[in-house]
Amino acid sequence: MPRAGLDVDAVTRAAAELIDEQGLSALTMTALAERVGVRPPSLYKHVPGGLPDLIHRVATLAAQELAALFRDARSTQGGAPSLTDVAAQFRRYVTVHPGRYAATSAAEPTGDDDPLAIALHDSLDALAGVLDRYGLPRQEHVHAIRMLRSVLHGFAVLDAARGFRIDVDVDASVAWSLDLMDAGLRSARQAR
Image (cartoon, rainbow, N blue to C red; front, top):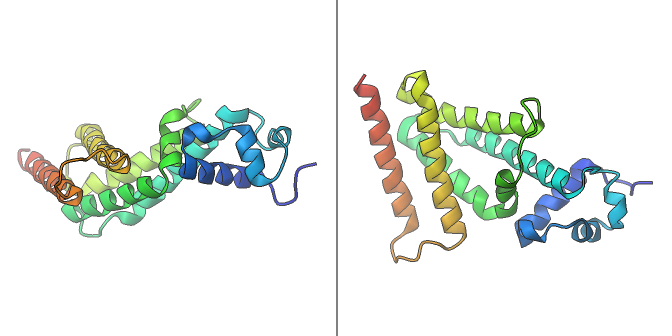
């Protein structure tokens, strides 16, 4: 009999909190069982696929949170203000939730109807919304989204890992990069 109040969502959230605090490698069924107050075999009632299933569920949760963050962070002005809003929110998310963000790279969707695939697609659509006001041709959206994701991911992950060791404000570097990206996107539109 499962513990009262414990369901797959509660188990997933507990796993997300554990890995945010201790890192993805700290996630074991034993550590999670201890956290939620059950014996390890009891977790399999909620997460039949074990650890891979659990990581997949945490990755889905993170992708859903990122999609909501990207939608909510967009400035109504579009352009550089939207890039700045999204970058700030994304960097904050990775700083606060490093484990669940790491899970998004550790899990693989099993098909188009997989909740993880849907959540990842939603997050990319939300990022595309940031770029819509640039008026790029549809075939160039993928390139622009990849560029934006790479910049956001690089700054967030390196910053969270204390990877910037030069004594120059990282926020200034992010702003400089986003200004350059904004200018490039605007000039790409004008070149049409």
